[in-house]
Length: 253
Image (cartoon, rainbow, N blue to C red):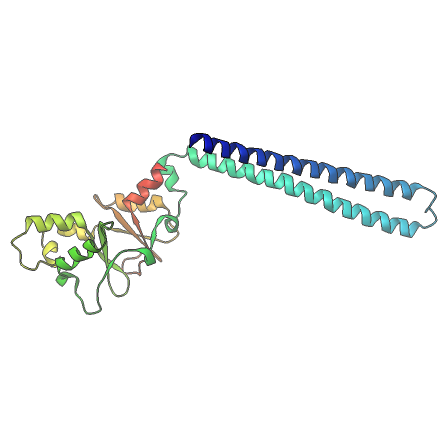
């Protein structure tokens, strides 16, 4: 498998080299052809064959030199501008690669790393549904629907976030309170230790960076979730969600 991969890479490199060589030869040929035309026109202009037709000579000479200048300018722009762009791109990538994990967060917009609202797995409260009366059994069933989901933002009908339930927190509460009959979110809120963790999330405005998201998490010990809204104000419609694992992934990339 390794030999096959290496052979394929060598073949692609050979094709790229031949392509570059062909481009160089084409450029040289066009340059040479352009100067030959200029030389021929100049010689004709200076010869006696057409010296009695000054206006026509001037017109032809101007037209040809303009055309040749356009060819040469196009070639220079194509080859040198492209190479400069590629060099700048490589330089920028090297600069990004040299950034520290914290510095790298400054280069990533929240919208680039967030989970868009359309892809978020959430529990949406009904219009007349109170958060405190939400049965924990409903959330257990919601987690059971998708084993990849380990936390659930709870959103109001207007799209704003009111709580985040981590499956580990839910299981911890249920294990410690097996005697409770039909426990609800209100039951967790009454727990002095676990209750505050339901509201442990940050909010930032769109256009901010992952550095801002990390700072929002750091301002609340134990916070692992940040939501993106239009202006960063509480009570606004959520447009995205940034988890601690997404920030870690960018820092380690």
